[in-house]
Length: 82
Image (tube, rainbow, N blue to C red; front, side, top):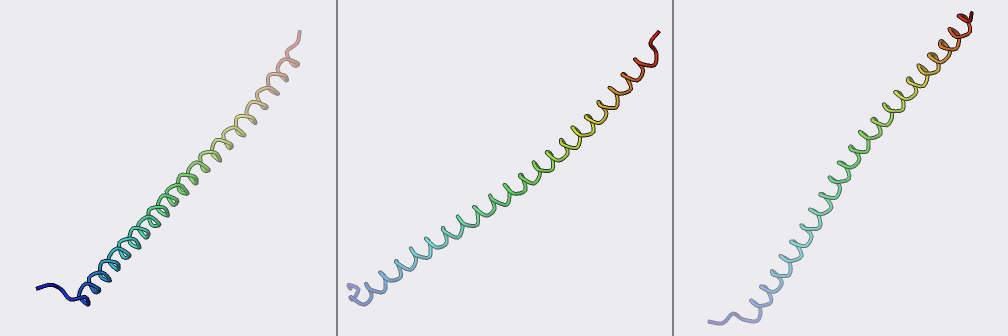
């Protein structure tokens, strides 16, 4: 028994709907993965920003310490001249 034209139309519509659902599902998955990737990138950027801030603080502290040590050395050199 051959399927009638109406059955063929229904199968074709079903096939198109399934392919469109698959396409939409793949698109949603891609968007979700992209947003997850961006959130990972954002957290990595935040960590790097924190590292840079810590580095800047350390550099500032070392600069102050170096300035103080230079002044102490200069003071000792002037005070202990024969």
